[in-house]
Amino acid sequence: MKALTIRQFGLLSTACLEDVAVPTLAAHQVLVRITAASVNPLDLKILAGQKQAAFPVNFPYTLGTDFAGIVETTSDGITGFKRGDRVAGRLNPTAGGAFAEYTAVPAELLCHIPASVSDEQASALPTAAGTARQALFGVGKLIQGQHVLIHAGAGGVGSFAVQLAKQAGAYVIATASTRNVDLIRELGADVVLDYHDEELLQHLQGMHLVLDTRGGATLERSWATVRPGGTIVSIVDNIIQPRNAIQGVFTAIKHDASILSDLLKEVDAKRLRVQLDSTHILELAHDALERVAAGHSRGKVVISIGT
Image 1 (cartoon, rainbow, N blue to C red):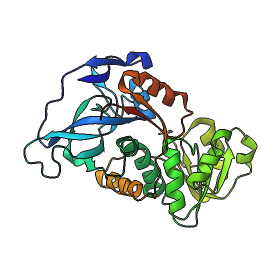
Image 2 (cartoon, rainbow, N blue to C red):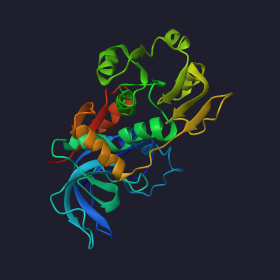
Image 3 (cartoon, rainbow, N blue to C red):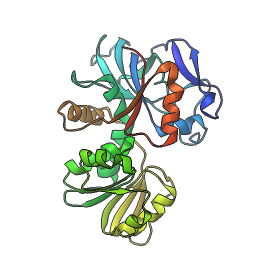
């Protein structure tokens, strides 16, 4: 089978499309023929060797965590899935394997895809939507009536966070580039700020919660926008600390197939929109990686692997 593989850490050119063996099933696993996989910033950090402490990988390593596909076969004793089922899931980053034609995945990481949801849409959900939900509600404790600032509202995590926060009854302020203002308003933001205009952010105050998807200077400027007792949740800065009367918390996605199933049902019911930036075939996976690395995608970048 074809797989986008690395044999050392490095630049995007380090990843090569190789012929590798189809995975052998272990106990409690399902063999999935992958049809779509989405690219996350985490994939680029793993490729560069920046996540070895958190997610140690062995070479050769096939990139990718988020996927959708069709069940080929199951190990003995699996009752929830059968050949032909459409499924989605998230692989452990240490294992990787989504940017390939097949993967062997523990059954507990999978969920069924509703008929109305495309494979590309399903593959876009696990990390981005799961992170948005966890950051807003699991860590940020966002409730109805609160004010939330979401940075990079047009990005993978941001585009889901805007929708989920608005559905929860929050007052949503999001930052975006000028070309994305209309999109973020469509997703439900009450106010959209051009992130190029630093003065706008300087006058913003009273936030109960800030979702930091950028780190660096963006995170630093965000502290002044938060009311005492409020919280900044960062998905970038893993050493963030509380400051004065403001909580500073880092969060990383903890995959839960039941949560992914809930999110898929929301997409099926047209209550949650999956904003797809672009789709690339596996043979041109480098284009997908470069698109995410550039940092200007509108929603999720997806690799189409088969039908």
